[in-house]
Length: 80
Image 1 (cartoon, one colour):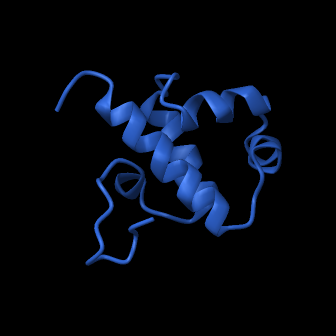
Image 2 (tube, helix red, strand yellow):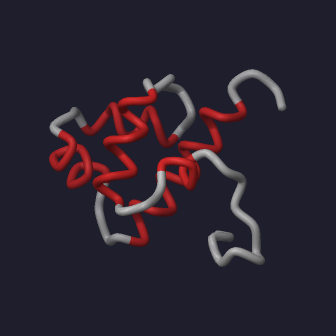
C-alpha cells in the first residue's frame, strides 16, 4: 500500500456511504458541523482526517469506523 492510499480509500468509501444515505456533501457537512469543502477534500483523498474525525463520520453514517477504511469487495455487498 502506498502513502495516501488509505486516505483515498476512506474518501471513496465516504462518498459511497454518503450517497447511499441520500446525503449531499452539504447535508453531511451540516450534520458534522464542518464546511462542505472539508467533506469534498475527504472524498477526494486530499485531507488527512484524525481518528476522531473518522469516528464522527462513521457514527453519523451508522457504520463501523473500519468500514470506512477497508477496500470494498463484491462479496461483502459494498462494491460500488
